Length: 86
Image 1 (cartoon, rainbow, N blue to C red):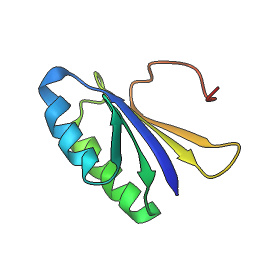
Image 2: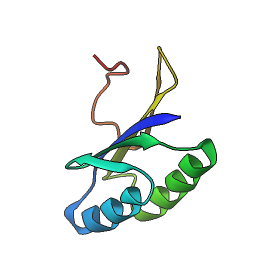
Image 3: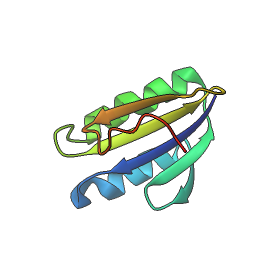
């Protein structure tokens, strides 16, 4: 499945999150990644992210591109109420 992952985490966790996500996806821009990933690898990545971030302060958003419409999942606080990519 194709995914886009973006994150907004406190500075003290940025390097660790960046290093982790780069092991699974392609780094396309500051705090933005994309790539093909199996469902099991995506679950593994999400489990590891949950251990790194503070869900009360940090945000990780994963767009699962399974066609239209796509699914959006947020780990931690949501920075926006938008559920659709324009």
